[in-house]
Amino acid sequence: MAEASDFDLDLFVVGAGSGGVRAARIAATHGARVAIAEDREVGGTCVIRGCVPKKLMVYAARYADDFVDARGFGWTVGETTHDWSALIAAKDREITRLEGAYVANLERAGVTILRARARLDGPQRVRLSDGRTFTARHVLIATGGTPVRDGGFPGSELAATSEEVFHWPQRPERVVVVGGAYVALEFASLLAGLGSKVTVLYRGEEILRGFDGEVRAHVHAALVARGLDVVTGDTPAALSREADGSLRLETRAGRVIAADAVLLAIGRRPATKDLGVETTDLALRPDGSIPVTGAAATNLPWLHAVGDVTGRPALTPVAIRDGHAFADETFGGLTREVSHELIPTAVFTTPEVGTVGAGEEELREAGIAHAIFRSTFRPMRATLAGREERTLMKILVGEADDRVLGVHVVGPDAAEMVQLVAVAMRMGAKKADFDRTMALHPSAAEELVTMRQPSGHWRP
Image (cartoon, rainbow, N blue to C red; front, top):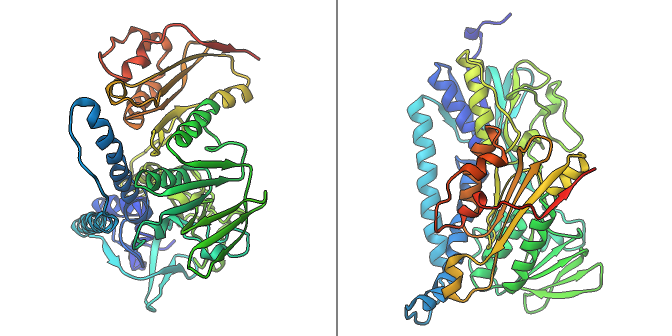
């Protein structure tokens, strides 16, 4: 059996996104010799071209509501305008700062950063795009995912993906967003908030597939009320550029939509293309993802994977937790249990969605009898502001044991509330525990502990 000294490194990490960076840093603190390769900015999709810059843009869009609502509270607000280029410049400065922090943390831990593309070159061997090769006792694949760029219709190459939006030189006045999941709806919502006329085109019967049905319908109606045109049950048939530079989108149902930009947000694929998988015995799934067990184990003892490339929930905290557990177990001799159950998640549309646990449809499919507690109300801020948008809160409770099985919130600060609710649910909270908790008044979150009578029941 080869000794550690027979290799150039103890760990070679391919990809410097959230999961790879965390694994590299923790492994190095355990004394491992670690290198990480990245041919783009350090930080990966979430930090550089995903959740972080998107959330900054969501904040920018929500100021539009603040200016309007302020009048209801006695403020005199003059004419307002938004400077897209100033927002993009400010966003870029913050992303540059964050990348610098990631680099500094890696270097402080003793990790060698290799600014090149890496691919597998046989067992325990990696080759860089600059020609250098390294051997490593362990190799961790953390290349994440990449947006689907082929929409399956003529002219789809004219559409942008979420990665390009962050660098648009100006905000398009008319935008068509193709897709109905997180990314599509978040960008549709923020662009509308900044002043664009937005059409959402989604092939399914309802947006946000996989979420609680009532949440899906509530968000759909709220987006329409905010001026978005949400079209379901239709898909693009062809996209072409007009003589004036604008775009013409034709749909399967016969719609013709004029746009200045089309955003293709129909999913992401595991980034395993050109990874050199064929030089090893690594077994990929049909969709290109890497099957793993435990924190990061593949079918090869020396090869590991974390993050979106594995097909596990495509969420940054999942990649970070798995990367940390892998490093602790492999180089620190520590046992780490990582559970992918009850993961809280949010959709940063306006209104915002926060959810943890099962939805009604999921419980019915599983044959679990449950009680439904729900509340809809106008947030206090909306009363003086004159805004009609309503908050939705749902608690789903198992009838067999009173355990809280799902909590769903649509409205301001939904994500913040659900993150804390998830702690209680991980501890096995029952509806009686919610009922015994004293309400914090006046707050929206108090509704979660004051719903006493169920609005319905479902039994198999």
